[in-house]
Image 1: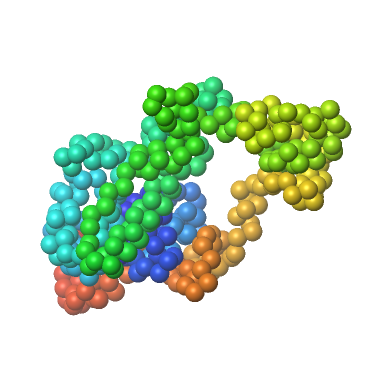
Image 2: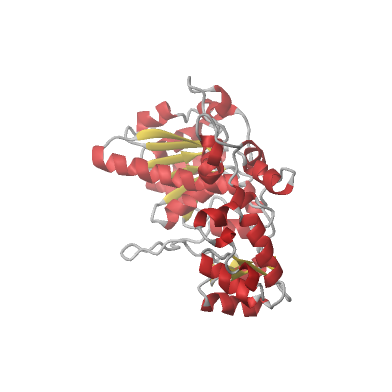
Length: 382
């Protein structure tokens, strides 16, 4: 698999595919990708982000503006089942790496091109507009969900557009490979961040507006109520989500709110959803009277969904510690799937920039003299 992607969206997609067993070869320019400087790291060119994001990949450093480098990429693509890129159509075509050029050297290739906006029906236009996570959060409705809750739009403090689109890329590539296994036919796949995050957001938030004519405004009220949030305890924070009538009754009894045990608002699932904001506010008042430890134990005893708020530092500290051959010890983010027959694994640590350039070029038939010539010409940056 050839990976010509950058930052988070594309590298996450190829990390997922690498974790699942793909031999991923990523192409980087001389300066290295942005994710290599996203936060501090143990060495130059290896941020904490890239230590996990670039695992299970080999790395080739080429200057794609050099014609000999482009020729090397096409020669490499002739050996690849999959090509994933987040270059926009214009730059990709100017490099001579559009679908027609790639298909000419590998007719059954699965090529996935991902970018912010979907192509116009004629194949161009909007897809060449720049986009980043912040822009897509604003355009896809994510920022508006904060307005519905808090009165003003806001950004989710995580790269949700990049990561949702990255997962969409990996799913699309696997589906296209399944089709090719059945039919022998490759294909071109486009993933637009806007499409991916809009679909993600509107699963529940299209809500009453999805019918024609609309039955009400968009936005799922149980999710957008300002009372849906972690609740303060006497010594911390916890999320408590009573889901059934009995769950609510157990909390109300513990809080001395016996007058609410037969409240019609908790009688049915529909009434609990309709009055979620009011009910969550009452639960918050009760939760504030006891410690986090108390509520964790209480909720476990009464089968009430609950979880103490964890800090990011606590979560990272719990991750397994592994050894990188150059960067030293670091916390590895485990793969999120558990297969009984084909477990995913980390087979390669994150590579240094250009670490496998000579190895990969030799695999596709370049001799030592030819590789030296590519270095001398600048196709392989110094």
